[in-house]
Length: 330
Image (cartoon, rainbow, N blue to C red; front, side, top):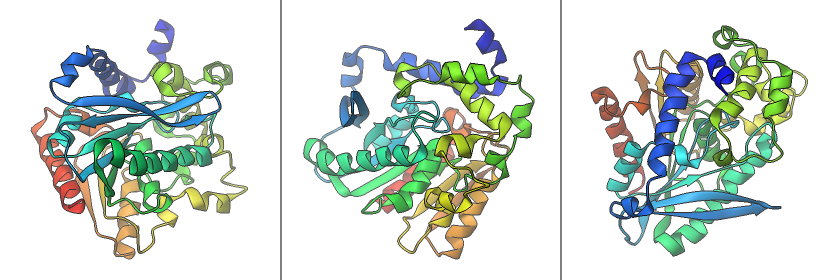
């Protein structure tokens, strides 16, 4: 374990691993602590063979026809889990009157992209049907919020989910999964110690859900794919050079239609993981299609800029997120 941690990039340790560890610690406090503030219940929204795929439902107060948020964790579809929702952000969503559903989904490369998207669709279906019965939400007032890989799934929600969500909020997400940033060796990650195929093979499981795995166990898979430009091929199971047309159904950038939901894009212009250009591309396409949207550029912002919720600038940005969500889910 110690040798693996030494090989992790400092940026990952500082901005991803350590915050996640702190967040996990917060979630393992006694249930009575949470009961004083909000309720949290876990449901299996889907059972695949012997695998229970779950979501956590958070509610501050019971009220009829409340708006809801489907929240999607990041991790490049390779790592991450539903418990990673930022506690300060969760509190603000709940205080604003939303019921929040944080979902798990099966992970790549063991599960390929089409089935991951199917998990998202099934989670949305469960929330619309059962969420309205159990939590009193309005099934027609659901917004989707996601970060990084979850931001990609959020943008995919705009054309994959039916009926359409009321709004989308993508934190440093991406709409193009076949261009050079993902399908060629990445200069940023090439600076890190090379990962061997044997290390990746040892990290792969049968049908993983990340709540049972440590992030550092999965990180070598992602790093290997970025160092070799293999993410599209290994995650989607399709070769982008030989079968580029096969990626069109999985590309938000190619599927913005007139009924695409109002969208908020947030991205730091110094992001070294997901290029800022990815949100610029979505912004241009949303403009071209005349879809109501906003694009918040975060000057000097790195990947995961919003984790620093104590930063006054981040607080201001997050208030804009809440305003957007409230306006779109009236």
